[in-house]
Image (tube, rainbow, N blue to C red; front, side, top):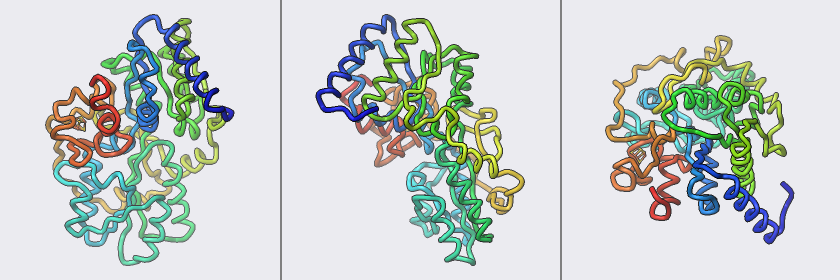
Amino acid sequence: MKKLSAEELRLTARFFSNEIGRLATRPIRIMEVCGSHTVAIFRTGIRQLLPEHVELVSGPGCPVCVTPNDYLDRAVAYSRRQDVIITTFGDMLRVPGSTSTLQLEKARGADIRIVYSPLESLEVAKANADKRIVFLAVGFETTAPTAAATILAAEQARIDNFFVLASHKLVPPALQALLEDGTTRIDGFLLPGHVSAVIGEQPYQFLISDYQTPAVIGGFEALEILQAIYHLVKQLHEGTSQLENQYRHIVRPDGNRVARTVLDKVYCIVDSNWRGIGMIPHSGLAVNDGYRHFDALHTLPVEAEPLQEHRGCRCGEVLKGSIKPGECGMFGTFCTPEHPVGACMVSVEGTCAAWYKYGAGRFQL
Ligand code: SF4
């Protein structure tokens, strides 16, 4: 989108807002799949520009939120080993596992280091040859290529004390699972820009061919989001279903081939467990046989504690868009960003955290 003056921005926003109002002649539910979209929608106040009957619901697009308890429990088990250093993105520290968090384990003396890129783990590995470095490889198609590239870099540098605990998730199978599940009515998808930059357009085609559900790949600026919503509403008004790419300056139709080549080299597609949604076929990435020696699960098996879910936490329903955070009895009282009960309140991209930060008191919960 070309750079617009403030006045042009205002007029364009008003145009989209008016057109959405004109075309939305019935209640419409649009799911924004990506946590960054959820935050951008709140930050820019887009809900106030939409008619009441055009509802935006958040989907399973926050990587920390969809990572299930059993993964956290295993990470905690690794952190308790004297010979292990955990490297992880900072968001993972506060996510509650069954009975502990990595933050708690760190306070108890576990060696857990925050990294901003998985590649930093290799420096930790070189500096600590007597330890085993376990990187917590979570996230969607956006972060998986860097984790895969780190495995390739470790192999090239002959680093043999670096491992990954992989729980990457793939977005398209989750969308299919939501449509099959049917507990949430979804009239259209605002598709994630960053994930799409890697996978391109093709993996979403089933939304049109099998489910006749309009889908638009959108950017993260206010006008880009409004424009995407406008195109979804327009399709619904005209009774069509198409896959549109309104983020073309970033998302190429065939995505990022280099990133996908790295993924294909190191990972394989597996069934994966999503918090609140359960096991989704072909929705995750695991280290493939050729690189198994970097797979923590294979090389350093650990016994995790018995799985316990957090009583009263409705993260699963929030992630499916079947309830809003305010419908959880603990929202804003027992569960806050300072004292999160569930994963959706931890990350800034978590739906409950976003509603708490931007929404409470300003929107109907
Ligand atoms: S408000 Fe807290 S307890 Fe409730 S669903 Fe969200 S994360 Fe879970």
